[in-house]
Length: 426
Image 1 (cartoon, rainbow, N blue to C red):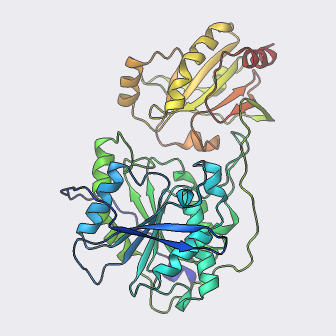
Image 2 (image 1 turned 60 degrees about the vertical axis):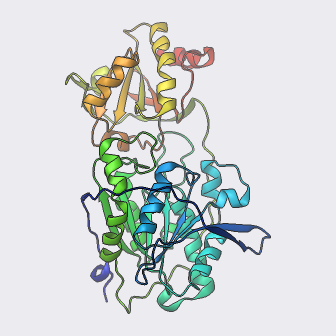
Image 3 (image 1 turned 90 degrees about the vertical axis):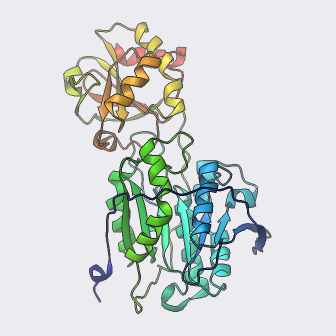
């Protein structure tokens, strides 16, 4: 059978059913020992009633297990007949909760949990979000190679990963992020749930192509008008809240759409290239000079601004979003910075990531912003600058060359920063 014969890509709109939500607590937990001496804690949330055809859900979390929206989601799934396991690997390992520590996990803990799940006498569905999706792929591959389940997956029905971040962090803003080698070494039935406003939306084809290279069966579920972490946000939009409430019903649709044919074989790559997670450089750092990608965007008033028209000035180009606290925190120092240099020689231009003019206008009524705010509604401009974190900023010289970048919030009017800018403005 040709690979394309069984790869299914289906995009779903959001359909809605509201649920009565109740509090939920794990009824028990158990520990799985590893050869390293560590133990992985599995918290068990049993179904409200028994449903023999419902798979066991095995969810690897990233520190949000105690959040109310996630507890409500577990309750909804339990009420539909799903048994639910929740695992927090960093908590089990007593490791500090940082992005780099997540990316550095090797996957042995995941493999142990999947092996135990495979012994429960029913199908199971491993689930992950964000960076933990990388660890789930690593652990699934280890489990497949060590346990040699039937057809390569045994009782594993499908892997579901929400807004996966399976890229290594670039060393500095503006560098293209690279997929970790395990993505192209993976062979699984996998559903990717991608919010349309997510950071990595435009990277999705790269992820799918890498997965397909080892005969993964890929299904895509689209969530309109939602950002990454939409069902876990403390202050979701109305559409994001609704989309989160619909996950239990949509999950059943996703699982049916990604159903695996009986004789389909999955075989992960045995020899995996090793790659350590990159530690990003902090602060304003010099980058290789290259022409800044040109773009034209409109501000909240509908006025179009073309970056190329700014030639002759040094530009601080800032990518941000109002829902990003560090982005908001650095705005006052950017306002002060703009006052420090001649406006004929220096200007700040900001690009908002995929928020509506109404949202930005409301934000500007409460926060003083003394520079243009352009709207990147579809995220294409941000993608052309390889934006992987917010805020991210670039210093562009008067000839349109990118000279410096920073992939975090900083105090822009600090003397050292102003000295660097002064050297570029000369």
